[in-house]
Image (tube, rainbow, N blue to C red; front, side):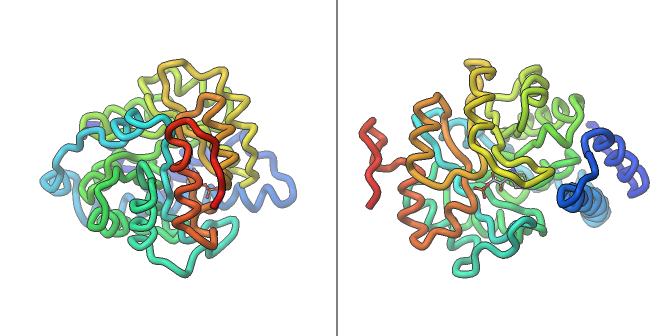
Amino acid sequence: MLMYPVGLKQAETRIAKKFTGLFKPSGRRKGVEAMLKTILAKKYQEVKTAKQRRPLPSLIQDIKPGSFALRKAIKQSEWSLIAECKLASPATGRLCTRYSVPELAQIYTAHGATGLSVLTDSHFGGTLANIQAVRAVTELPILRKDFIVDAYQIYEARAVGADAVLLIAGILSDSELKEFMAVAHGLGMDCLVEVHNAVELNRVQQTPALLVGINNRNLKTFTVDLTTTFSLLPHCDKHRIIISESGVKTGEDALRLKAAGVRGTLVGEGLVTAENIAGKTRELALVNTKNGGEYHAG
Ligand SMILES: O=P(O)(O)OC[C@@H](O)[C@@H](O)c1c[nH]c2ccccc12
């Protein structure tokens, strides 16, 4: 098994290497990019501590393999909503105070979501325990949404009941992507492999990734633009299942994406900040249009 016992010093070097040339220091961008570096540096430290507290051989004892629940659910449906339990974000701060993570999960489940994304990173108000709490209230497939930088986090995800993990191409090398995918698949888990540009998409299309997430948000500037999905879509292999992530707010957005050939969307902010979260879930899940009709609000 391939594991990376990364010390902080090594981690810093790895991060520095990854981002050399990617960051053009300028004005506000510098601050946001620094945020991503901070998140990643903290992540390596957290993984190190978690491994010390619970070494992999012990963690593995708790693991029952999954059954690729997320891909199965998505394949069964013409349009999928992966609804995200997102309480906060580094760009906007606190997003939702009305509901707890399991309460959001229950609303999403009752109103037509295909799967749930549970943020486990602290900068997004997340914890690993949230997956367990969500698992206790729903049977829907759960995606662990975090910055996966070490295979250990995939085992950790499965141990608490996740069915899938997010892998962000922009922060992983080709060999890490392939290794992490192999670990997840070996555990019966799906990977949603996230890309933001043509270079990342090409890299990901050299791997067996089935679920490809096109992130409309640039993780280095936090700007969101749905045209990211529309412009990358023609370059996606026909056999990949494409999910549009971030910045999707309305049923009209969902319909436009669906008409272009996208199979689903991953939505956080648009749901948790809605006045009527249940109604917004139905709107974005295209509950009224499952049989091909037009979406009508209300
Ligand atoms: O809240 P939004 O704009 O609907 O976005 C959801 C999701 O795509 C976003 O949370 C996200 C996409 N990729 C990430 C990577 C890490 C943390 C968060 C994310």
